[in-house]
Structure formats: structure tokens, C-alpha cells
Image 1: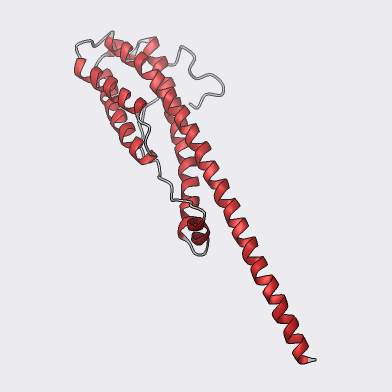
Image 2 (image 1 turned 90 degrees about the horizontal axis):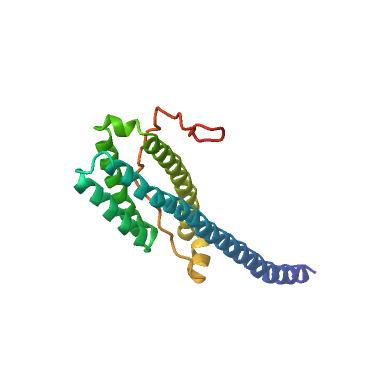
Length: 201
């Protein structure tokens, strides 16, 4: 009778162990797929906000040029950096380098604008500056969400035993998107209505 019980336990174990293993593999695989999709979707959000900033830049350059046309080198540097960022289509880590170059050029442009009181008081420039502030806020929020998803995926790709499932099904570590903050100050004069209800500032 004792031998019969041992046989039952062995049979039960032979069924349960593979079953639990299959449940773990399926659950881990589905979690990895979900994270990969979240990363793709959150990267699309970053891309949308970056393109919003790209669209603002020509107008910003034109506004500065109207008051500081002789700052040609600064204006050309922004236009060149924007062109490189727009055409960048590599991995996030690679694209971040082009974005950081653009941010550096924009910081220089905004520093130049500080030397022109008439420009700083220009309603169109103030509006563009406020839009840049709001866009930068959205970029940083989208970046944090994306990087959070990347961290979750990379952790699962590194920790045992989920790393075995990740390797088995070809899940790779994802790149973080590390970019400098533009640190745009909100314009003081918002008579044009940038501080409407629902604004970030």
C-alpha cells in the first residue's frame, strides 16, 4: 500500500512539475510581450512630443531672427541640429545624442534672446516660449514613462529564471532614452493667454 502511494506521488509530480513549468513560461512570455508593447507605445508618445518641438523651432528661430539677425551662427546651429534630430531614426540611445545636441543649440538660442529686451517682450516670442515650456514638460513625462517600462523589461531579461524565457524567445534589453532637460523658464508676461485653464503652468 505504501508503494502504491509513492507511485501516485511520483505520477502526480510528473504531471504537476511540467504543468507548473508551462504555466510559468506562458505567464513570463505574456508579461514580456506586454512590456515590449508598452515600450513601443511609450516610444511613440516620445516621438510625437519631439516632433511637436521640431515644429516649434522654425517659428522660434524666425522670431529671434527678427530681432537678432546678426546672430547668424547661433541661428544656423539650431537649424542644423534640428535637421539632424529630425532625420535621426536609430536606437533611442543613438537618437538621444542628436536630441542632446539640439537641446544644447536651443539653450544657446534662448540665452541669446535674453540680451534683447524687445524680443523678450514680443507677444509671438512669448507664446512660442510658453509652448516650448509645455512641450518640454510633456517630453520629460513621456521619457519617464518610457524609461520605467524599459527598466521593467530589462529586469526581467536579467533576473533568473525569467531571463531563460527571455533568451529562449528572443527578448532583448531595451535602450533607455536619456536626454538633457531644456529647462525652459515660463515667460513672465502671459497676456496672450498661455495660462489658460488646463495649462501646465
